[in-house]
Image (tube, rainbow, N blue to C red; front, side, top):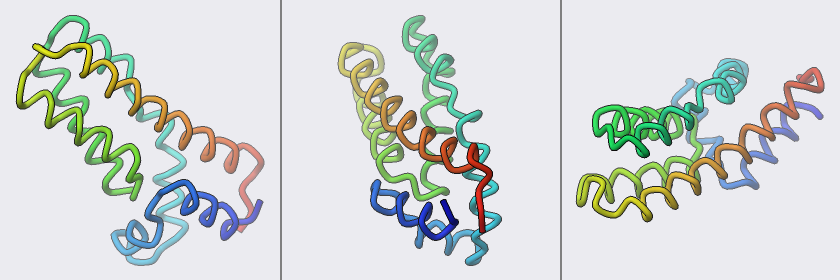
Length: 128
């Protein structure tokens, strides 16, 4: 698949590629180099562990970092999930663990979808 087809596929998946490219000064190759690293930067095991152990600092920082990463890359579905987690966490800490768990799994599913697209593109020897 060529680069433009891949970027179009990302857009069709709810990713704000054009807005993200603005953050990368229009440099598609730079943007793609950051996207290529994304699958290795999704630390859901740590986030879920922190949730299970009710480790406020680790949970908050993990979700906050996920939100920032997703926001910078235009990954709106992941960003929105992370934002919802943070809103719930700030309001109730771990009082509504079931809701936090459900939101975290939703973010994980969204992340896995995007990671699969990315790995598919780069795994086939991405073409310009």
